[in-house]
Image 1 (cartoon, rainbow, N blue to C red):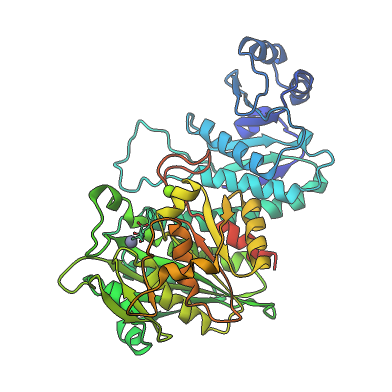
Image 2: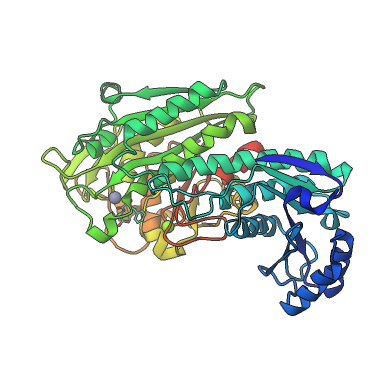
Length: 498
Ligand code: BES
Ligand code: ZN
Ligand code: MG
């Protein structure tokens, strides 16, 4: 979609469909209509009354005389809209466009921008909301000729000359953030029959090929054996798919201000292993690589967003399957740091693979490590389906991530890492056990398990994204059911502000 910035509509047909956000305020609505130069102003005003269009948030009104189509979008009574309001407003535009055939559209913002200092943020929010709401995962559906296909080629935005530059820049950034998120959604939505560790590795190789500041190393099983990642190997050993250990690296063109590792859980299918899941709880387990998808989605646009820090993207990718060669409850394995883990339940496999990927990450001379994992059902019991549970051993890091999540419109809530609970992960025969001795506080005990592998001096945050990585129902107007791409925008906001 091409963005064109103009001052005023030359004629209302030039953008085919003109979207006008408008306040819940009778006078504001009337003066908007007068300012529009609509051929038949009376028609518009009478329709507004007939349809009882008050400008309430979410309300919309379509007016057309076959030459000009205007869609009024109510924004509610708030005089200043938040970034999230704008994202949702763009989502509302897409919802309207799914009902009609249009190639060109326009958006009338002049009256919103008087005295608005955040034009760049506005542009960013509109691009994000529009692109994210336009997302479909329909590649496996037979083309339905009766259905309207969303295909907008041109978006004209009307604003003042002074604001064009900022708006354009913000819009470009928002587009990249949305594309990275969409990449992650695609990876999560792809069924596990195709979305194998090898497929993820191919995606990483392709990203490195296309982006000059990104490089990648794929470690095969022999190299993983050499590195003594026996914890990771034990999760993989029941599967017929080849494991892949993926290490992406972004090097900024300027001198790096810091070095960060992003670690994603990459279980391409979680059957539970010998502790087999029930049919119901297994059904969505293609999404157990959502952490990896976020890391890879982020890397697909990192060269365009250009953070000034070095970033490592690390994923231990494998399946968790039951078979004659699968690891058995009661097994003991060592991670690459030499810590022993009692595998009491093969379904708590994410933390076992992370024991090695976190260890590997910390060997890359990084100062901060953030992992993303669909780690526990317990985090959804605690926080519901939309919130990510944040755990961190560093207050500044935690606060930065919370602030970035807020900017991105992604929900995140901090949970504690209490020392007193560490004993819940004790094993009688090994250094640590992969399931706790109580069923309470499962998201916390899982995070404390991960902390066992964090060495002194590493600033670390763990994001348990089991809830919002995958939306069972439409999450909001720009997030359809399925893979959400959670974390791509939060983490890019965080990295770009460093
Ligand atoms: N992949 C699951 C966690 C999960 C559950 C993600 C539901 C998304 C939705 C993880 O590997 C797992 O199975 N965790 C177990 C841990 C338990 C055995 C201690 C769980 O949460 O039940
Ligand atoms: Zn599991
Ligand atoms: Mg979910």
